[in-house]
Length: 275
Image 1: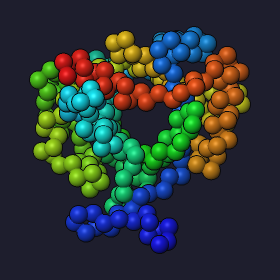
Image 2: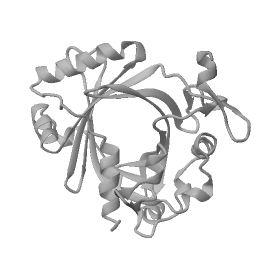
Image 3: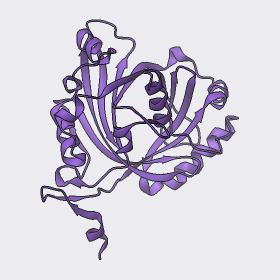
């Protein structure tokens, strides 16, 4: 069997699908708890110099034999809304993202990066590489700019839940249906999980050819700090070494174990619902 044959599959409707190839990679090093606090101090981060946002996720959490189960996350589907904190008017600026990680086989329409500037959305395929192992995980995400009316936000993010479909655009729904078989009716029982308070900084560091993104997440007792840089897959290994080295030059020792912050945060948020 050739490599191309191995990478191809058939959908239930007979459409040929294929696991896409990524040209870009995001190198990440994540800190949690006290390590996150120490790293933030060492990097001299100031919240008023970063971009402050509130993040919400959606899933249908259930109580399982091993604790909280997150069915959508278990299928590799992450649905996320980020709202700017600076804009508290009738409409708040933000973005709505559907992420598939690990990325499954995709139909031909979703085999490459796409962008629609008129509609304000972008689809990207890249490798996520989280330290210390930096194992590549293929990720596909569709991010759309949104201006969310206060009444819609109150309805969808409230304790009773609302119709998540109001926040999704047609390409979101097309991707969910064609890639993982999620239809509009499957979204009805999803619950909003949040808020997560986030601050993001972008900095230029000596020793790194590209900007560094630093993001802090806080919800309840959980605190995460993620340092990341984007690069090409061809230069990913070199970027991993450079990021570790430049952190140490700033008196920040990378953690010995990687943290899956999205799963930890969603699990904690589900528990606040009494699950």
